[in-house]
Length: 104
Image 1: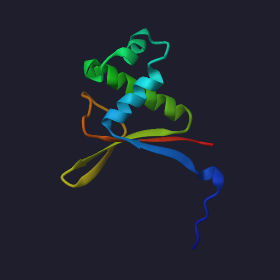
Image 2: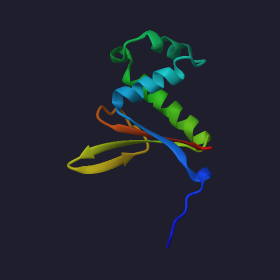
Image 3: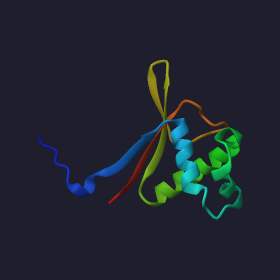
Image 4: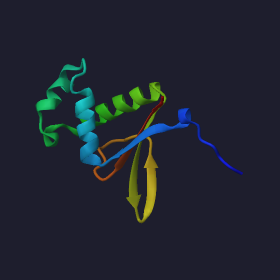
């Protein structure tokens, strides 16, 4: 059986480590209408609270979902790759992030 993939079935996917994902969040939402988030562009990542990172993550996840994309976090625990579609109470430090953008 042959599986054919047409051009319109391809999706853009990027993977980011924690630092790169945080940079993406700041670049994407640091110019938003949210006054507190506007201050992020000039702040050091270490000074941004875990609660703010989670708010930015939730906003990005919502934005991507509305456009047909997704955002997943992955971590390696005891040589087992675990996927996460949400953050509970604290910012995960060693996850890799996969952003799948909408189909074009």
